[in-house]
Length: 61
Image (tube, rainbow, N blue to C red):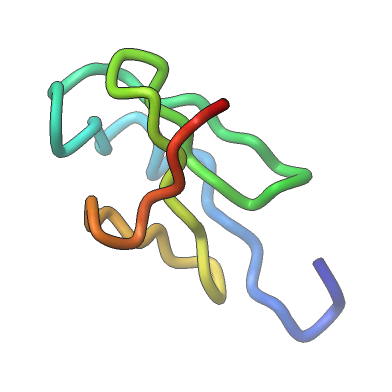
């Protein structure tokens, strides 16, 4: 993340759940993703905004 990229507000994590399983998400700061272990998906964070669309999610390995 560079100086021009807005940071993800970790307090937002308390309000967000996985759109597939409605379970808690983990914040991966290095990858800038919200991870749903239950759904085996990682949702990207772009410009500080989580993209909670399953079409945009990356499958976990």
